[in-house]
Amino acid sequence: MNVIERYNIEYTLNTFVLYPNKPSLQLLWWFLAGIIGGLLALFFLQDHLDEVMRWSICILLIYFVLHVLYDIKIGSKIHYIFDVSTNSIYKKSPLFSKKKIMQLDEAVIFTQSEMGSWYYALGAYKTQFIKNYRISEAFSSGRKSSERQEAYENFVLIKIDKLIEKIHLERNN
Image 1 (cartoon, rainbow, N blue to C red):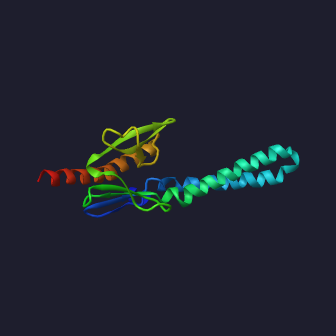
Image 2 (image 1 turned 135 degrees about the horizontal axis):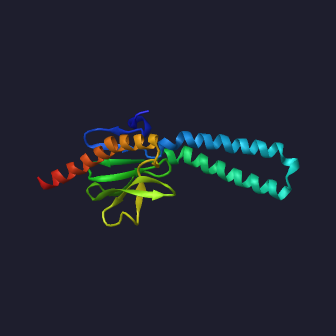
Image 3 (image 1 turned 90 degrees about the vertical axis):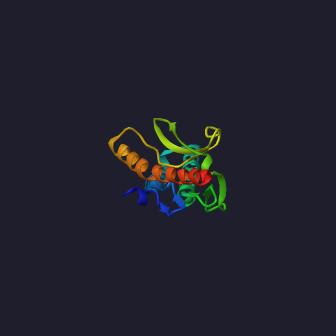
């Protein structure tokens, strides 16, 4: 799967749309299948478990189901719109309307690490460590991850950089 399909990228001369959570969608479906398998196992093993233990596990599994369904239905549809014509970056979600999160010329892309993996994040200049937005999947040290990282850098980051350069060139002219 190439990087355009992986992140459901749409781009024109002045806009760039990126769905950063889409790569984790397949993994979320596997998690949901595992949780449902856990619920089935709980049903078949209910005679061997204490009632408090059974209810505790059931409540925990139901929480996980709701969390995964939220990530599948809402989290994977969150996307960022980089728009040169308005010099803005927007965040759009199924629950909320399009929200301007920062100026395009203030955007800073940096790496953020988290529990043995890292990802690219987007923040406004001087406040990028206070408020930032995840714009890539998590990368690790494996060969496949390195290939995905290289594809991401060679397409997505270059496109975003060109949009930021375009803003700076228009401002200087």
